[in-house]
Image 1 (cartoon, helix red, strand yellow):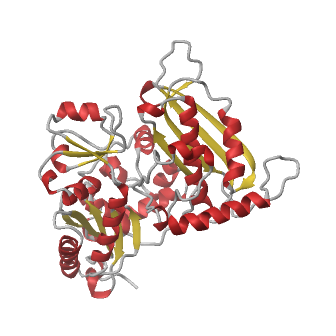
Image 2 (image 1 turned 180 degrees about the vertical axis):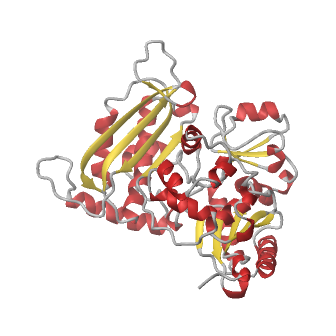
Image 3 (image 1 turned 180 degrees about the horizontal axis):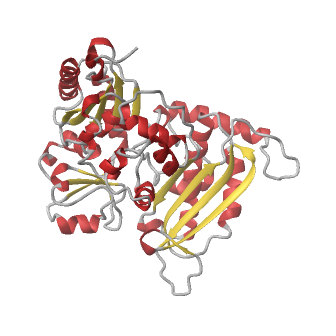
Length: 424
């Protein structure tokens, strides 16, 4: 059946993006911060980076990822706030409830983004715009009077997200199918979700420097550049086609932590790495998965000229170890792996440590030729600890090796991952 002009002008998705979310919540909770340039950080040090910036700070050149020392230079009146992730999670729940007063949420994309599929007469543009305005008002009335969001309305979720980024803060942008692809031409390549620095470089190597050039590629050309069917899907999304994405699966569980000055010793870094492993292993079990590899990463402050290893972020020396073992999920077995790997870690002054569990499977297999197989007693003990920690909080039961640092790795929210109730 051919689409009618009315069908072509409809929008199927509403995408909501909270503006400067962490900083905005701080301004909501602390009224004296309203109208002030604010950044949120995970550590009280000028050497750390901003994880969020208010629009007052952004207007002065401060962005997410800006070092605090540089942010203070750009903005002498800057208010630096230590992150309180529990509050951001609480407001996330309030915002979801406010949105659902107006229409059901189809997908929680991240801590500050949700997508809603529009149905029936909701898809008529005039009705969709009224609905978007009602959502904005509901957030102000029921979540926070100063909280603002940008909303995009479009034929598919990809374009609705793109539209939500086109006008900030507090914007409302509509993309209709007849406007495609010309409405996208003023954007930069990396303004499109799915095009990061690496994809950008690949496109430019193929002579594609603008969104207009990108949109003029044939389906076959885009598929070739992407090297997979993902290129075909991207081509279709740019033209407003709406289809269900295949389910994606988590490929790893991990955490990293910038060490406070008092914890920048090999011994304290090792203890914090164990605490990070506790968190990652807990998430692994909650997902019903088993890991077959553990990667341990350390970034150092040392600048010795005879450094023989790799150089990491901002030109600092780094060290990484990847250990493989029969699939397991209990913390005690994984700690054995970490302890062995740590023996090879250089004894320089550490700045950051991270732990990642990967090679995930949905089951394990007994390997009698390895001393790293799961002991049923350890597995039962881990299950009992999980039960207690789920009920009373994540630090109720823990292994003695992390006692001194158990409070140094608090809840952190990645923008694409929302912790469950177990980490509240």
